[in-house]
Image (cartoon, rainbow, N blue to C red; front, side, top):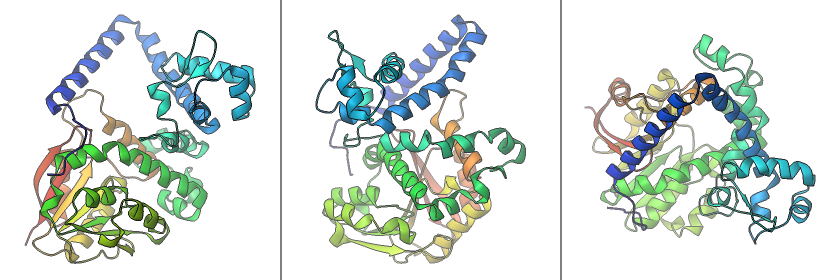
Length: 365
């Protein structure tokens, strides 16, 4: 079993804390007048933009070497000192940055995640999700709800992934954001599933190879195949070499709508199927089914929607898919049906310490 090098808490304890947090939030909503509780939620959008502004200015990077006073910090990030103070005053109230008794600003654990060089950095994700492009897409949510998919007025007349491919500045921002988000669930996935049982792991739509590189680094007897579009895997080499696995990993360019590499013992898709409406999702899965050996396994790593009505990250991402791509998050039952329609039988759905689930399936003869 590939395990996390750091000691992880038991899943039962994590889920208990989640339920306690949700219970406290419900109590808060009941104690506060409804209109005020709703206003707090609406104002959360302003907080998102404040976090984005701090990331764009790289305030966390400017504080990486230690606390700074307002004048010095404003000069370092190229901002008006008073306006920067007003921005940080809001963020400090939410635990993002702090101001010491001597007046100097400093990092907090939350602010550390806004550093580009942090072990787990969310700066690229914040820059994308707070960008004007992303805000514009979400202004069409009501149109998407009416239409059942991305609105005609969003995306400048192009499908989401087509725009990411043609506008490479935006596409690279998106790729970095997704790599940032994917890093959050990497260790929980590796702790929950044994990849060492396979000889060859084919990562379909694996981006720049972050997950595959870590799997191969922890499983020295495995070899890998990284498969994605040419403009995506073009930057995979340095990451694979840095992880010391480049000699055990082949990089292949292509589209999973047309073909995928053959000869794998397991085919891995992380956050791929949820990007697409049912028809395209079935097409991707059937392409893999037509190529993979009959003894191979299929692994989908996705945010499987739960059966309860407590807050869940998947409910947010589900609307993100509706607005941008026309894809959707699914329940375990819905994934079972989608896989059956594509020539697979779902064997297990394994939860992890993160919201990620690992769905393991086999091809049906």
